[in-house]
Image 1 (spheres, rainbow, N blue to C red):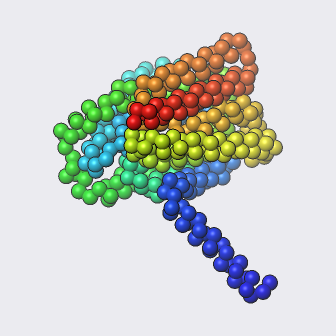
Image 2 (cartoon, rainbow, N blue to C red; image 1 turned 90 degrees about the horizontal axis):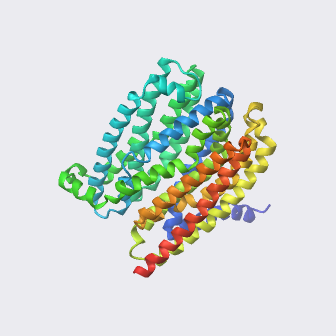
Image 3 (cartoon, one colour; image 1 turned 120 degrees about the vertical axis):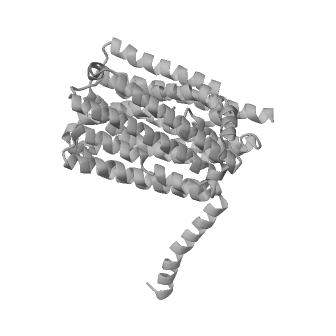
Length: 450
């Protein structure tokens, strides 16, 4: 190789990097998605790399119990702030953002207190009857506190996340994604080595989900200097009334939506079949669906930030962005799901241990549902941004009814679990397709209204 060619070989990559940076600088949407993706990909890579170790420290049944805990926690925390946090990207003035964030935190405090009362009010006998495996009294109290602490931490993270989205602080969000991928599995491994068992698995998950909450709030405080001087009880009341549709419609609709998603599946599977099967589905979701969900969520945060600003002023631009995101996400998700099915069939037992081989069956069963959910994820809040909460609520109720009916019908007919779960995934896919149509029509009507 000549000296000239060697020098050009060194310069070329630098030139490519420079062109890439210039291209991203000229396209803020892609730049912000790239920033979000860097943190999300790093966090998920850590989680996936540590999964083979976790599956050798914890059994499918323990993962099944974790899936039930997370399902209950996730369904509860979607209304932790009564969805007021979704209005944060819509605020224009700093004072409004500060006061609406204060509304969110006040509501979170009240709902956390209510959840705490409810959790400790349920008789021990009732909890033990519903819990998928036998439980001692000491474990019951520990699980109760884990629910309360997990609820408060995750609910606070949702508020901080939307506050950071409003200000476009995507590097800070990316850092929290990385922290979540490290803190969650890392603490689960450490607690397993200390002999914490199933409670350690649950505690580590709660720590991972809420990681970065304080960091995002601290970053927001640095951006809005003197934020405490902007606080006003009067303005908080004004904003609470201004965005009242979010708690009145979006909050319970979000609860129905969470129940209609895969969260309810874990509860249904544990009750109708066994926690072992729920554990298989949880692992499959962790290594196959969750990477897609993190990609979709990363794009969603950027999409919300942009869509909240242009929904009323430039609906044509919103329509183009919607089509762009959906089409590209479909191609990405299709390639990923197909590759996961092929690689999983060949290597699942070798990667995660022989006891987990049965998980491949549930990977095949859920693939269609995972594909559809991944396509919808980046644009999921479009109806909320367009303030079409009633339409979104109607869709969420319909999805819940359909998916539960399909699952219950399969169980009543005595079908094997993989067939029932495949039907559940197909029902999810049909509902996601309908949602895409509803969102596209709503954007079209927005353009006509302007």
